[in-house]
Image (cartoon, rainbow, N blue to C red):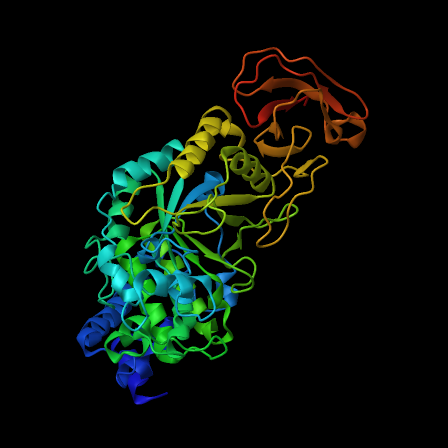
Length: 523
């Protein structure tokens, strides 16, 4: 044991329970955590804040077993009921990249990549990158029409139960008030704590607040600017554009410690009940940092007496230690553990661009139903303009989704999967980056359950009798006592034979997009 650790553990014996400090202590001692003198003292302060808050948390959660930074301990994690019941959340990609509004939210990277349309567009529109770089968009990012009350009211009308804004994207510009970087929305651009304002309003309107961090990808994100004459090479902007290393390089301990500090600052300051990570945290060198953050965050949940959710992609966390997220795709069947799809209404970009195309409410509703039938949640993204307004197309899709959920929400919220997710002729997309290219029809059925009730949902308005083979008597799945159509008082005509349940068409369906049948079995 080093002298540093002996002194630390003599004064604070509890420190031995927090492996994050074993990772940080050497870098802290040698002052390798920071390159910018301006933020040196602030980072040291946050180090101690992280430490002392953890110590205080130990005493406040003695009645409960605390999580340790190892996989065996983290496998004791249970996904909270609020998340499993919520089913539907809103993702928000909003940042400096909404100013150029060209290509995608990866504009800050691609504008420095020779041969890309973004590189060509940038020079033609703004000039060479050594004269006008990505940093020069920041004063243009004014958010002058940003109204968090209106945003959250729209999300609530859409039927969403949780809201997850991006706190920092790959570009390295923080959308919150931070002590760790001057490059943030509170000190520059809008000069507003966007995350703080949204957190307050989301909670005020009765929804759950979460956030996402894409910080780790900043390790390599701006590296194109090192290959030709650009402002990325200017030492004055190293603390914004850097490290700008290569993807095949292992992140440095300094950068990974900075990642950990930024995330713990977000947790301490904004108390998110969901924390979402992008794919690059799966780097092998990140293993102790992933474990340390998860244990810290889960213990914070115990301290707050609130269930928390940590989203990851691919294999960054072992099954059961956090909640799997699949980008722009979904699963082909039921997963025993809860999972999530993150998808965007915009087809071309997560952030705002001028020529985006959009998914309609029919697509969102039917895919939400499909995902929920397989034990998943849908986190649906919008990309506001740089002035803080939301596009008409995204607004229409959100309101259309909310209109359907107003009538049929009982078949979505608080439900669990049945024995089978469903049946029907349309093959479900499967895997990441797999849109549902072939639309579902009324002949595609999905099941959800709540207590003794089975919901059978037709993914369209039936023009002919609905035939559900999974509910024929020979399947042994139960004898039906009654069937009602959710949102309607109409008496349905139906029959159950050995081969199938047959429900005759209705004259008036209570909502568009999809029809929900509420089924009670004989006991």
